[in-house]
Length: 188
Length: 188
Image 1 (cartoon, rainbow over the protein chains, first blue to last red):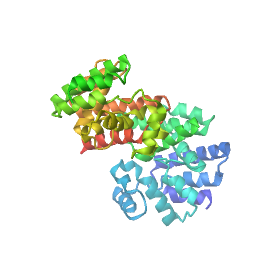
Image 2 (image 1 turned 135 degrees about the vertical axis):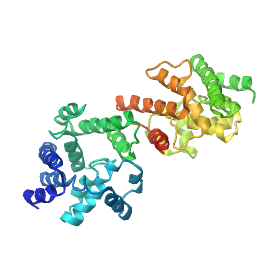
Image 3 (image 1 turned 45 degrees about the vertical axis):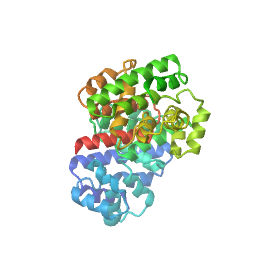
Image 4 (image 1 turned 60 degrees about the vertical axis):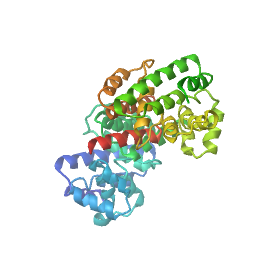
């Protein structure tokens, strides 16, 4: 699918603010793909569609998780996690995206997972550092992303976990497994 | 077993410093048991024996984890975790402690676990706040322990996780699950 067609599809699903965010993720993902040797076209597609389901009703997202082969424990954790796996499903069904790598990069863009692919890392990180993002610690992750993908990713995942801990919120197991997996690989 | 006999057994296994720590845990555990309605004799026993295996050779601890029914993933994480489950085994074999609740309080005193018993919480917390402990955040947990056991425990587990995150160290999954379990119960 051409970029313009993909953007047109996604624009209808998003608020203006979220569409601008999507454009930022797209540019950042393409740059990271170029820098770290990921497939730029796949990075573009995954970035464009990553928040496709962001504004779907929670009930719809929940029904998709219940009816498809997604881990059911997602429903015990913050509903902010749901749009990623449900989005991967909807993007395949409604936008006709069939590429498994692209779909998995969408699926894991919020939680991460143990054993992330290069493309998944690029999308997770692009979503975190795109130019429209402004929160404590983002500049440090941006700086690290220029030097080392995994180090930047560890810092991003860690910031996310710290944010949740500070608010006494549960941390979805995939998120801390992402952290553990990355730091244990760096130790090796 | 009487307190003096138990202390005599343990003293032979520990350095003086660690024995003093054990006495502190014992006093604190009895006080917490009294305050929160746990069995004081079991709290005393678990506290006295909690660090029984602390100075056994790593290889011995590893062999116990390999040969007994302990989760094998312990061996992928910090060896500081090993003395707790291996200690529960050794305390049963060598000191003849048969009480399952006491043994489980020893087993989980470092990692915690999802669904901790009252006795397990008392021992975990006593180990963290006994008067000989001096590290950032311990006074806050001491203050919380006077008010609410679970709130104090959440803070202690959180501090432990934060400490590891700051050092880019892996966090044993049971520790995260302890945190998640406790905060999710408080939400209910």
